[in-house]
Picture (cartoon, rainbow, N blue to C red):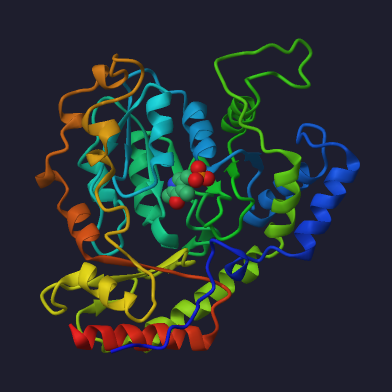
Length: 402
Ligand SMILES: *Cc1c(COP(=O)(O)O)cnc(C)c1O
C-alpha cells in the first residue's frame, strides 16, 4: 500500500528553523562593526544578559558548545582525579566526555523507564564516599524530579549540574530547569530549540561557580584583575561574535518556539489517546515539558515487533523516527567499554573503584527498558495542526497494521 508522503519541516534545514531577517541583520551589524571576538563585541554580552534575565539567574556565559558548557560546569566544581560524578547513561556523549577530561569518573545511575530520567532513588543507589557531584539531564525536554534530587544533594552536600541542552524553559513546580543546581548548561547546536549551528550557554546563581565558569571559558586569564595571570589549566571555549549575533536574535524567538511546541505536543497527545500499545510522554505533576522531541513508549506485547517495527512501518508513511534513541546506554560505547582516553594510560579509569565502572546489564533495568521501548519523533515549532494530525493518524494506522 502506498501512502501520500507529507513533507514535514525539519530542524536540519530552513524548513524547521526560525532563522530569518533578524539573525541576518544582527550578523551584518557584527561584521560591519569589525569586532568578531565576544571579548570586545556587544552581541554576546547582550545575549548573556538577556539569557540571565530570562532565567532569572545572576550569571550567564556564552561558550562554544553544549559540551563546552558542561566542561565548564565540571571544571567549576573542580573534582580531584578519581572523584565520582553520578550521571545518566541515556544522554549525549558531550555530557560525559567533560567528566573524563577533568579526571573524574562518570558513575551511571539507572533511569525511570517511563520518563527516561534519573531519579532520587537511582542516584542514591550509586552514592559512595568518592561522589563529588551529580549531573542530571532533563531528557527530551521533560524535567527531572528536581525537588527530590536537590533534597538528596543538600543532605550529602553535593553540587548538582543540570544538562538543559534539550529542555529550554522547561519547569518543575513553576521554576525553570537550569536554576536549581550549581550550574545549568544549554546547547545551541543545529537541532536544539534555538541554534547558532554550534554554541552553548552556562548559567549559575553562585558567584564562586560563576567566576570559575568565566575563567574556564577564557584560558583562566583574569581579565580585568589588577595582576591578571593564567590561574589554572583551562581552554578557550569562547563563542564568537558571529554566533553571538545569531544567538541574540534567536533568543527573542525562544518563548514562541517553546509555546508552539508545547501546544502541538498537547494536541498530539489528545489525538493519540486510545491507540493500543502506545504511551504518550509521561509528564509528572508539577512539570512543564518543552518537547525537544516527542517520544512514544511502545509496548512490544501489544505492538508486534515493538518500537523498531513501528519505526519501520512509519517509514512507509514517509515519517522519520528514531527507535531506541541512542541505541545503547553510553557505557556500552567503546570509550567506556575499552577505556580509551589518553594514550594507553586509560586515565582516569585507572583511579576508579571497581564498582563505579561495573556496567553489568542487571544494574540498569530501567535504562535497557527505556531504550527498548522508546520511539523518538522529531518535533518542530513549524509543524501545522494538520501535520500533527497526519502524524497521529499515521501512527494509529501503522499500529493497526502491525
Ligand atoms: C546536544 C546535547 C549535548 C551537547 O551539546 P553540543 O552543543 O552538541 O556539544 C549535551 N547534552 C545533551 C543532553 C544534548 O542533547
